[in-house]
Length: 91
Image (cartoon, rainbow, N blue to C red):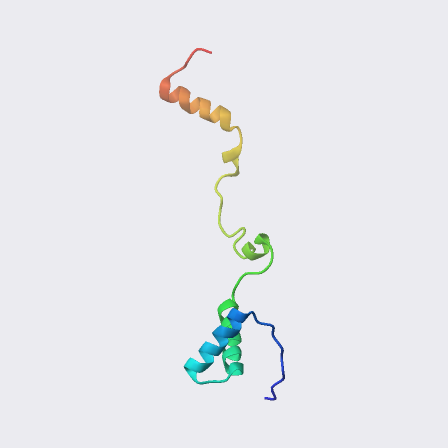
């Protein structure tokens, strides 16, 4: 495959890291950068994009949430439970 030139601006620290890696591995600067790109792409391949709703869409609605009546008349049901546990209390 024909390679093309791609310019990248690096900080002095990033440039130093490329140079140290190149010397340590005995490869070209281009090889260090190409390998870094391949590894980064593989590492981030499955990272989520989009809104929370879009990322959670496959799991939304998968599980039964129980009775829909659980969140209705909670005050009355709680009072009834307390009365059963402690007996009737004067108001």
